[in-house]
Length: 214
Image 1 (tube, rainbow, N blue to C red):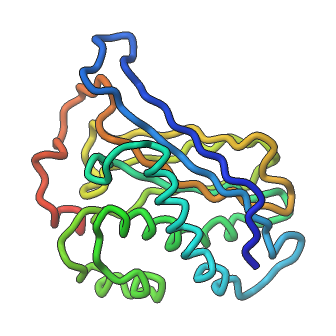
Image 2: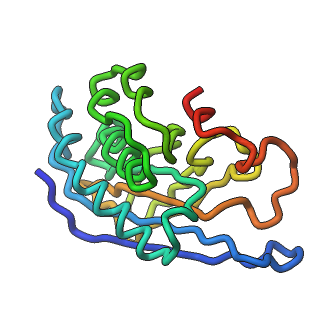
């Protein structure tokens, strides 16, 4: 059921946005895996088995993305995920990425909760994980589109999604994908604030690790 055709990685360093040059550039990275959609062209009532099969894909992509960014895991400050479904699929197929993609990044960053609890809809049980990074829900977006479709993947702080200076989005486009019978699953991470963030609000360094559970 899982057949990967391509993996596309994009990393950028932002030194300034027409203002002072940053002492340390912001590193942003995204990875997209192009998979055959086994449900393309038909309606399948039970698509949940594929969610479990995507778990190792998410883990591998999260590790590949961190390696491509060439930064320490402790430097990751924001994350996001998304999916672009080919025209012969449906939006719900992209929703299969919520647990495999999101929890792969959260576990990579040190979260120690129970992803199975979330998959089963037991959100309160999922919140009982031990303290660590990756406490915030991973923001997400998805769409159905043609080959070359662009997706703006939302990014928020890994422990408290209301850190205003780290609200961002990463524009991701995999050339030639998805074909009608494919899905592009995407993960994205960055190392911190927008280069010239100056609109106030809570700072990441002022949150407690448990604030992300609110």
